[in-house]
Structure formats: C-alpha cells, structure tokens
Image (tube, rainbow, N blue to C red; front, side, top):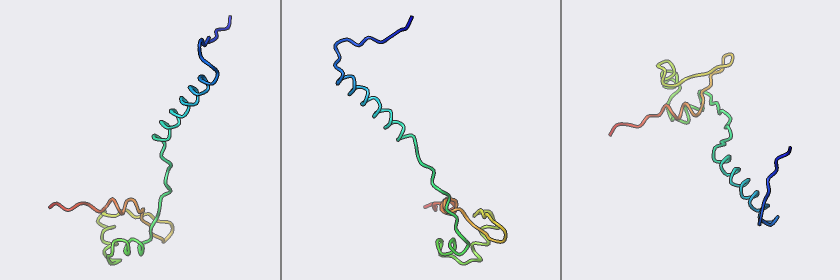
Length: 93
C-alpha cells in the first residue's frame, strides 16, 4: 500500500512558492557555510624581503630561528604568504 501526502486548501501556486522559498533558504544556509578554498600563494626570498622591507640576511636568520617557515623544491626556497603574514605579532604596549 502506497502512502501519499494529501494537501488541502493550497493552490498549486502557493505550493510552488513554498517549495521555492524552502530551496532558497537551504541555498542561503549552504552559501554561508561554504567558503571556496583559496590557492596557496608562495613567495620567493626576494619577495619576502620586499614585503617585510628587510635584508635577505634577516630573512635567512628568521628562517634559521624558526620565525619563518621555508619550503623548497630543488635549490629554490619559498614561503607561504599567509604564514609570513601570521609571523608578524602585535607589540605589547
């Protein structure tokens, strides 16, 4: 025996509008939760130097001390922009 839904005193237009509103609400909730993934931006040592307005020796020293995390392919060294920006800490006033 099949079960069905019986709709009383609702016009087809009202039913269609209710369905559309429900779908819109679901899409709005989904779009609030969904954040597209941003591609990782890699910077060279020279770009980090220019970004932070320091010398290459300073970038090298900060990397050795662990203040900046370096990544590499072959002999090339790269830094993730987000990590470089996060390495900057607020000063205590």
